[in-house]
Length: 523
Image (cartoon, rainbow, N blue to C red; front, side):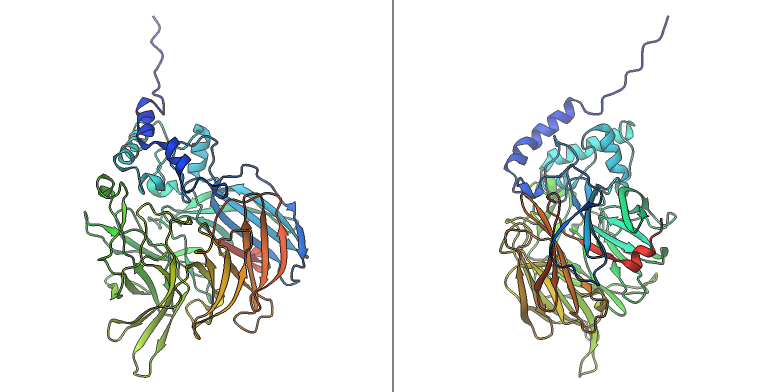
């Protein structure tokens, strides 16, 4: 008598359908503020399609621009949509000899490949914690149950990164980053001077030495190229490390958060100065228990928790303590401009900081939408001698965010910041402001017209003599098309516009690989 065939449990069943119904995914997505064309995915992957140019590309501008972002993988989604939800996609513009090509590829992380094989979203995402209440807790529990049953690959939380927030180059490798998981190192090819990326790569832990999320904004020492990473995990612990020449030189847990207490909502960006890392403990708080009680979200803005700054030495070692500096107001920070150390006439050592700050924030974290309040450029001065915040002052009341600077000036006194105008358009940015930090005045502005922008990236000229001798490049997006803009950063005037062969979904952070970086790529 033959035995009965083995019954394999389905990956998704009626329990999943019930949770999806409780989350009202179809209705939620239909009504969502993210249900606009700019957040719709593109599915066609292109490779080095020639790009039409109007104006003239500067002769000394040769290299590759890379920018990633989320791009939903499936036509029929089973998760609530958000700017942070979806597979990662990388967009590439390569400029050579006054001409340009465009390429794009999904970032083929282990999570992407697993979900592609199954044919739908499987693992947890941001909308499992920013809303949904008890139903979101049920979904998180089901995912863990399926891992234990062997129905889906048992990825740890750090293995699930889509690599969709930012992209950076270090020591001959290109990393796609998303601060909830490990860094994802892309596998690159160079063929007759052209960079080819097909999204393949591997999660990087530097021989197992890095066991925490890796920052989406590693601060880069302009002299050495070292990566400095500062992140928090789901428990609220803080991790700090340094990667030099692709070797992990340091990895430490610098703060253990008390169990059961609300923690900082995120540790996204921070300052690197000559001797210190400076990071914000923001007024946005997080607790998974809050899904049961607090606006159906793990997040909430606590007006009684005033923003404070943590200062640690670059050469942090066991036993060192975080120095905390209490600011005068509650606030939320996503991105910073620049910070540096200086000595006052009284002999006191000080750290000067500039960053856009939100004075309130929605519990559903409606980033890059009209629901997000304006971020106002702020200045803080930390007195290292007295331990006090000597200055806490708003410089601009109009909403600007996602700043960039000449990266050669990171950690040193710099004059110019380039800030994206988010308040005027609601979604993304409608222009870029050049701002003089020292004189505290607006210097120039470029209007994006019909387009939205994400981040104006500064690239120095080949023979730069002044801080603003360079170009601003920006990937512009609309409902129907995308263009790559090149501005003269000194005059804030347009030099060239590259008309890309297809639209690009909303996204923000990019990087520039010059010829030297391309020559050093590990292939």
